[in-house]
Image (tube, rainbow, N blue to C red; front, side, top):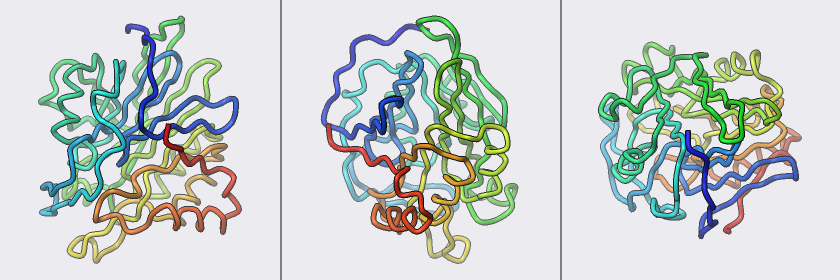
Length: 273
């Protein structure tokens, strides 16, 4: 694994909440870049302009906002973490980015067309990645259910999703939820990894009128706060809460829910760099 080179911060959101934390750059949707253990990790790359896209389950998703940057802003990426392949998490521009990434970690059923650079992971399977300064980063897949129904039923309709946990010697523990609607899955992760130093929680309360009686297919704001509590999170970076028509709760609802839960101080809202 090659070490990262010099990186310029451009016109996208940067999150660094407290002196002991690492920077997270948010490009919109669930697209982030994490500088962690001397490596650069990219999550769910989405860089296409606004428009409509076909998704699983007979649904169409509408992107309403441009990303907070461009694929050309990324410089080199060491590892891509792809939670699933819906077009609001992996689009044409994102696939182009992945063509230059040396390692892609994703679900056991996805990514066949991405070639030999893909490592497929199921729940609690791990990949060890060498750090440029010695040692390793461990990336562990964790469970996620993309809807309010039994996992096998949801996966037959909407496909498989995973989250990730990043760990390493003298490094913070990082949770990346993926598109998850199940607090039970959060509890399973918490049982193994809590307390979590940084939780990147996908929120937004997405709904579709013809899908699960318009119930949320990812955590709503109150559930996101409960997930943070279950994880013992010390820092929460919300993503996946704006920029798409199917997202029904945004920053204001997240702020209110975390305040009601007494967890407002955990929220790390990136500012434009």
